[in-house]
Image 1 (cartoon, helix red, strand yellow):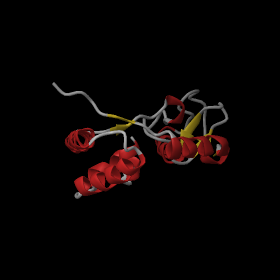
Image 2 (cartoon, helix red, strand yellow; image 1 turned 30 degrees about the horizontal axis):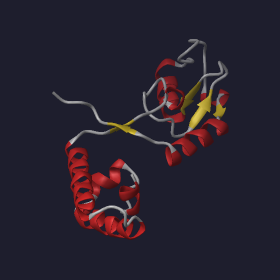
Image 3 (tube, helix red, strand yellow; image 1 turned 45 degrees about the vertical axis):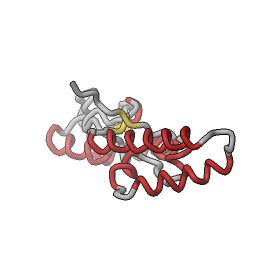
Image 4 (tube, helix red, strand yellow; image 1 turned 180 degrees about the horizontal axis):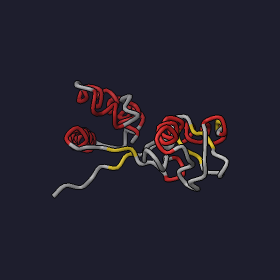
Length: 145
């Protein structure tokens, strides 16, 4: 991980977008070589090859962000970008709930009549999601046969 972070690859998206990744990996390894002289050149060469293989695997895979269930809207099954809380106590993404209400005119959970005037922003959840996305976001890469 230290190599990737020193090379400026902080997310899977960074790995997928970058074209000249081998140069950045080598620059990061050169910095690490100075800090860890106990390892020989064979170690560093093998590490560089391994990092490049990892990047190639990521570039060729479909990577999806792992979304903890408490941060996922049960209507859209995606991140809650703007979480709102309904009178039922259930949180939804604002856009997803607006679409639901426009069609069904009810709370998705209780089926009781509901308007957007009855919901309000869930600021704590929004902060928690932002914190998670900035600090703990992980990706899963589906296995292929």
